[in-house]
Length: 537
Image (cartoon, rainbow, N blue to C red; front, side, top):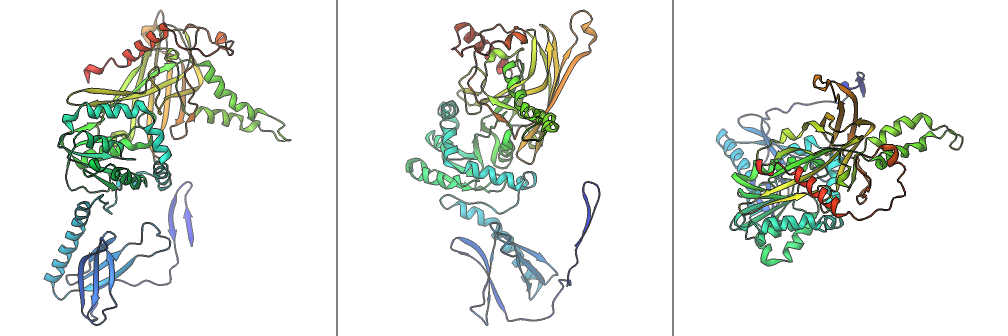
């Protein structure tokens, strides 16, 4: 094999093959064959039975087979190799000769009709199955990432971790039960059903039927759990497959899902939620959750900054078993700051009121989630060093009876999502009343996550500030796929918010203590500020 490449990408590839032959119309004859469409052990098949050899039947799985016309009287049927083990199995093909054009046309119509009806007929059985049609999920997500993702969520211990987040699970239960009117007698689709707990909630609320779609091996556990609750399970069908690929026998009146990841968008399941809306939801149908909001505010946390910066001190060693590590110190320093920090923090670390970016799940297009650009503009309420941008999210269940929010805000009860902070390697200094501007640009990638590009700038202030101008700028590039899971409980800083940085560094021996009434009031005010647009949605 000869390969010719350019600097960074292949221009062409040449292979030496032994020979080629062209598929063409054949004039040769063979014994007559009966082609039969049927089910064998629940699998839809196309079987070819030679009249002269009853034992020489050929079987083609209709899920993996395709039919092509070579002429008015001749076609080719190709069966793809098994998706489970393509390296050890091979595609098969046969040439089919018809007696006349009408027979050919009727056979092709029957073939397409059987392929279309297979999924609907299987879904009429308990716990239906999935179509074999390809989806854009495979085009935009790396196979290795998808494999790890579905393996992770196919384990009960991870499902337990989410179910034991009682803020999460309790809010979902309350949102469903308080809005029974939206579920009674309705068809529900649970997108990414996991253990099936949300499907069971929907059935408790009176849903006529629930289709629980789950692509991981957790679908088998969901079937077992649902079967163990027969009074509810008789109205739930578990379908193993991706929402991009499955077929349902009817449209849904309401979608329910838990598609939120860190920073709301991590894991890119929101896109699957939107695809499910476009494929399965009736016009004006409901979505639980209905909208999501990403909240952002600049923060000051000298302790966190020093913790991250000090990690790279290891690489300053010039005599590590006789080896100078210093050439990698700068790269390591930037590498640690490329990790978003996932933990719970004290809301008093915020130096300005939060702003929000709204994603309306009922109207957002899938493509709009590929790249998200958020302009940033804050007014600092204190004088301090700004170390980066703090982020959290909330979602609204817009029920007909009750509107309920699920929030991950700092100061609110902690969830398994915690909060997220993007720490800049170069802090910026601000004074009270100084304007902070910038941009958070989030670009999706094939590892089911996003690259975050953050820029923060301190604008001129005081006399002449109206003329604009930037005094200091800092930027960073972070990978949401590779966070630093700090996940400590929020520290309560007894110092005033405008304490100078060098004084903060002298308080490392401060005992962590419970928040006093003043701090609680401040947290409540922070939450109210972040929810200021509740009534405008």
